[in-house]
Length: 77
Image 1 (cartoon, rainbow, N blue to C red):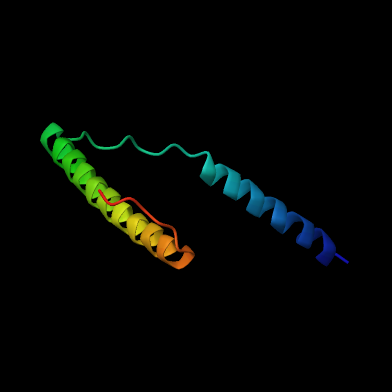
Image 2 (tube, helix red, strand yellow; image 1 turned 180 degrees about the horizontal axis):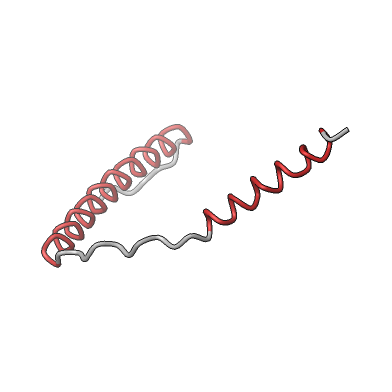
């Protein structure tokens, strides 16, 4: 007859443990070297520019394909 009480207590203990772990404070992050931070920022900007160029090319290809399929006449630049 004691088994049902145990099965009610175990989930409560698990929830309390999860809440305790979630509310634990993390240590502060280590100080960041300004030179490394600047380098990382430049790499991120370079990557973003490359991705934007690739996206623009892909969008142009899709637009050209759509126009070709629909028979849309376009003015040449």
